[in-house]
Image (cartoon, rainbow, N blue to C red; front, side, top):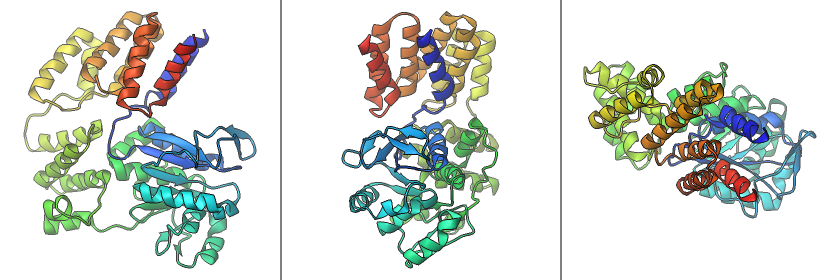
Length: 414
């Protein structure tokens, strides 16, 4: 019974968060200290996990720490062995003077120099400030700590009327709940507003308004309209635009009727990302459709075929689609996995649930989450050796896929 409960819990809570589609930016480290504010890290962490990033915690040591005097956390890493992430995050709570700790300052500078983006929530801005990472920039922090940040670091232009400030590579947010808005902005910056909105919908968070902060950035739309796409982005060494920003550019170009430029923007992103999100292809579909060009079926079409006509019919639809539109991502595998669980496994139909997951494995053989779910269903079919094979495959594809490692450890102990 305990085994079934664990599997159910994993599927219900984690299936969205571990789509694990790879892009250049995927690893996020969150630095924690004793008495950290819970929502400062838990809010953004939820956003990042649901958005498919690999998130891990770091503290000065690996000893358990207490968040807000009540929640015990065992850090994944210490500052001695933490891998350099793509995004380093500092959160508030604790003691602001911890930011002056020499070892932490040295580590923060090392992480910042090796990471692509730096992000802070609440008084986490003091860690960035103490390391000199906010000098000459605009920043914000928790409202009651703004006077202290201004007084202590006169080289920083501290603002008290914004939810977050995006300087390009460094993003700071106001206190506690503002970290959630800043995290959504970060997801939009990397993966596009359409994807960030999908994450917000999945979390049932209806408070996020895109762009509700201070974003210090050139007018990308106007530059492309004036100079052209190649001169502004593709051939520019100074632009440093992130994928999500270019996808948002495509949306703006589409609204202005600049369909060829919009298509060019999206295809540029697809060419430089290993596994583009479904929302990226949905944007491309809309543009092609407006041009009167053929488009593949939608994820809704696939799910309708799967639900009404069964696995074999859905397989035939996909084979036909993949011939006409090779490499096009149009299936929301998370919806299909949910259908397998809720509409079949949960109702006692293990065979159909397994067949659905096996079809998804045929379509997404290199997706770590699909391999992980294959492992789960092999376990349900009393085949632990096959389960172990798929868990190991998930780890080969993505070495940071910790759920697969946990299942391997669990099976090894038996």
